[in-house]
Length: 326
Image (cartoon, rainbow, N blue to C red; front, side):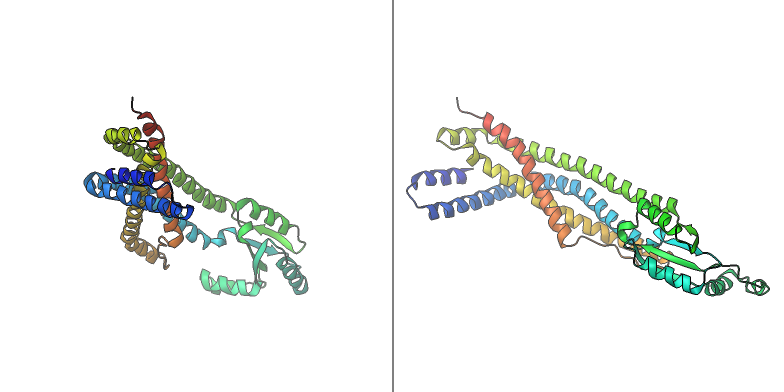
């Protein structure tokens, strides 16, 4: 704090300088105070590392859950067949009627793509997959109808929108039966929604804990420097000038805690990658965990810095103003 006091005295002696120099000295003063607060953390590095470790681990849990939910959404996007509608066409529909139906619904804005399966092709696939090929050879007619598989757009893949699309398709004269596994689709979206809400609640509670931890740490720093603050106020230092180093301390806590959380999340994802690969191999799928990209890292660091500044601001606004010379 002696460095800051020296800078305050120098600022009082050069009140005659121009506006440009004042702006330069303003930024120089901020840089000096930021580096001074970082030096304070280094001089008490054991306690600082413990605080940064608590902050980093507190941010790690919601960040890891966010990444896992993001990966779950990527997996569920590949399960778009859950919202796929199966249309069984009427037996008396001619090929011309079927072609008109396909051209008509292909123009609907709710539909992404359609796939037509003729009855003969469906029968051949059933013979190959069911193992009853010899028995089916005795059938005089094909019992299977023509089928149209309709895939809604991403906007209309939700349970409510898919149900409305199904009702609309059932009104077509060529359609005899329309099927959609609404219950499975609703379960899928409900699970993802619950996971997102759970991550939000956990993140909110942990972020509140981070603000309180930083606020309490800054409060102890202010009380430890009470005598210095009294002397600085006696010589005319403003509250904003005294508060600035503590705000920068909260900034460094948030930034370093965010970097520690990023490293911990990367380490956890690397540790889990082998287990995920083993599970995906059982389902004959190739799935890799998506880690933290540049935008997510920037969001994480920005959020951790905001939490650090918020915690320090709560303390300095209250406790610095309470310290007044008598």
